[in-house]
Length: 432
Image (cartoon, rainbow, N blue to C red):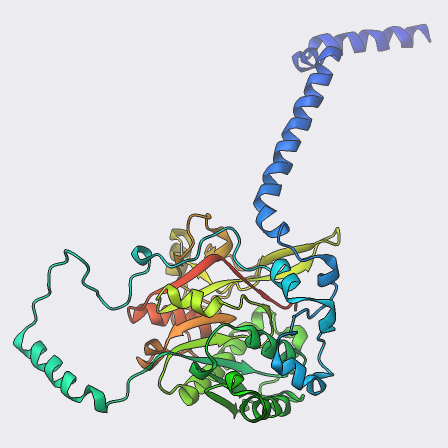
């Protein structure tokens, strides 16, 4: 036993003296190292907290969040008059949520000034400001303008500030109550607003509910709540995809092509003399009442807000993340990747198995409130009607490796139109 003790003592002595690193870790230095480690952890936590502060401080209270479909429709004539129509929808008891609470608890614009700045929002038409040299016109151009002036009063031009809201829809009965409740809060003149729906491949009460809604709004509702037009179209494509498979990567190309066909059918049927076209998803959870005026103020050909979704994290708290990954900006890395693709390769976002290196709306600093984009989604997209009239639709074929809404953005840019996004102007989509 004495020999074993001697061997252990010799080993420990050599271990402590022979390795320089062990000499550094002495008993008196341990507290200092613990304090340094704790400070570094604290700094990391504070950095992560600052990054998420803009979302966490605006998270709705649990009393509101426990309701799956929380929308305040207390001031909605539609909800008051036709509540029996939507008994099967998952709307909450309106008495539990006040208008003030909904305004405070829901995400709108976080810490950014979205008032229009003329210098940063040029119109698609050139304007002559003070000190700008006058453009000289040729004799032929002057003759064209003179002829236009003579007959302009007899030709039909887009109705100034008129808005056409388009929504392709399928099996959406459970979300229609919220859809119209949000429309009722929209601060835009009803006499300048038209609605058009395309019902496709539905097997629930979506179409019946839309027909009853049209009858109420256009015949029963007070005149100030009636829309300029309320159109319902039906076009079935007989495309059936189980809901559990709708986000599978291998199903995306065929699914998005069918959606492109539906969008093209809708806008070509519904667009008349409106100046603006607004594409809205049928299952949005919230958007600010003044969003249409805010987006129009930027005077862009195509513009989208940042669409979020909220999910509970492992601690049971609500966490917001970007829902619409179809709104993105190309980067040098993504362009290099695209240059190596085959012409038949299809790109889609939001999959870990396909890294596209694109820049999404949550990757911009706060000083960039309006940014150029190369792809957009269709959750809430404002388009100047002349973009569609010039032939820019939603490709149902591969255009620069994209289809549907991303293909629409690529096609619009190919026609010379501007496509933009607002990284810090938030709307919210329901949780899938």
